[in-house]
Image (tube, rainbow, N blue to C red):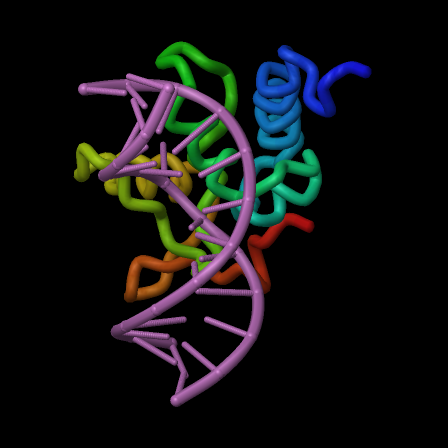
Length: 109
DNA sequence: AGATTGACTGCAT
DNA sequence: CATGCAGCCAATC
């Protein structure tokens, strides 16, 4: 019997996450939990970790991925949230005065 | 090899 | 809507 988890499971999982994020249309956003369900991730944390491990020159619009509050997630470095917000605004996503996104309007299913 | 952290979520108060 | 507590997996030290 093989192990219930192949050695490349994590790598495939990451690829799926990136693929899902790439599917997000421009001007829309999605949440970690949503992607976690789409890629069948064992937990939303893995999705966040995949973004954190995202290389610099990646073509994945990680900026369109926000937390379930519709707010930009806070990274350990800090300050990056402003950069992300700027990119989203450039895509046509409007923010509330609280710095949050209306998932009802921009939330991608 | 063990312990800690981390771009999270869900439910309860 | 905000806050607090618990749970899940993987990567890092």
